[in-house]
Length: 126
Image (cartoon, rainbow, N blue to C red; front, side, top):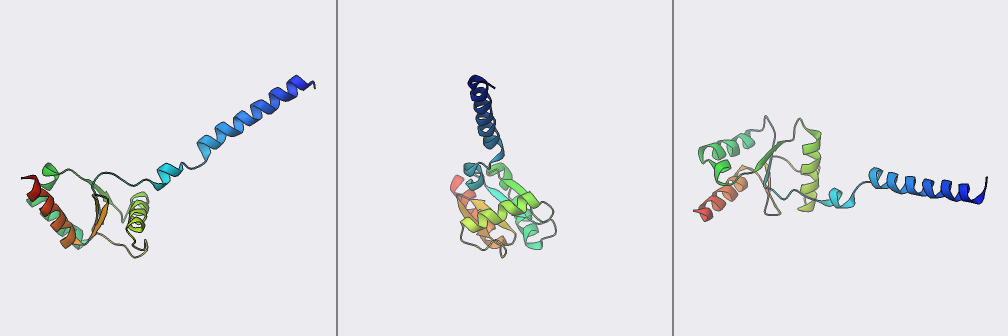
């Protein structure tokens, strides 16, 4: 092989490694990002979650301040996301439970704290 072919093969190999690395390595910014929306994490059989849901329905909270709802008992992706957010709030991922609300870059845990949050936000909008 002449030097030109060797140079071309090496250049192509370097380019392929670079492109492959771009697509295969995890994106650090995506890995460390948190949802910017208000997110309510719940379990489908959680009685305290149902209290929050009843409050939301009775007070038309979704119409006044839309938020995302994510079930964690049956969805591993949502559960992992909840654990990641809990750690950002200084909570042990294996000890966090639902109902759990991520809002204003803060964590709210338990039906009372979440209902209080929604209540205060709705009052300030009126």
